Amino acid sequence: MDGTYNIVAHTPIGAMNGSFTLETVAEGLSVRVVLTGNDLTVSGTRDGDAFAFDCTLNAAGMDVAMRFEGTAKDGKLDAKANTGYGPITVEGALAE
Image 1 (tube, one colour):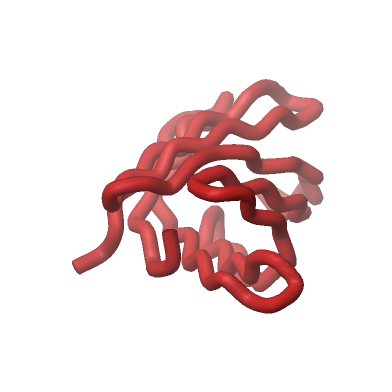
Image 2: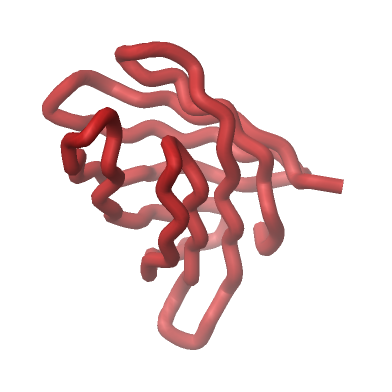
């Protein structure tokens, strides 16, 4: 699971490129989120190939809270998040 994944987030306002960097730590999971002009690191949880984390991203001048839940396995990442503005799906692959 650990590594940097180049992602495409399919949002209500269109597709956006970014990255998630997942790193297993003693407390669970450290996640660096680079998306929509944001660059932040948050804590998350891990259970096997499954992960989850909460974050707030600034999108078009609005702070949007979301919880991502997904899996990272065999170099592929799939996740979903719900926001007050609609669902987000994320797909990605380990960066080379």
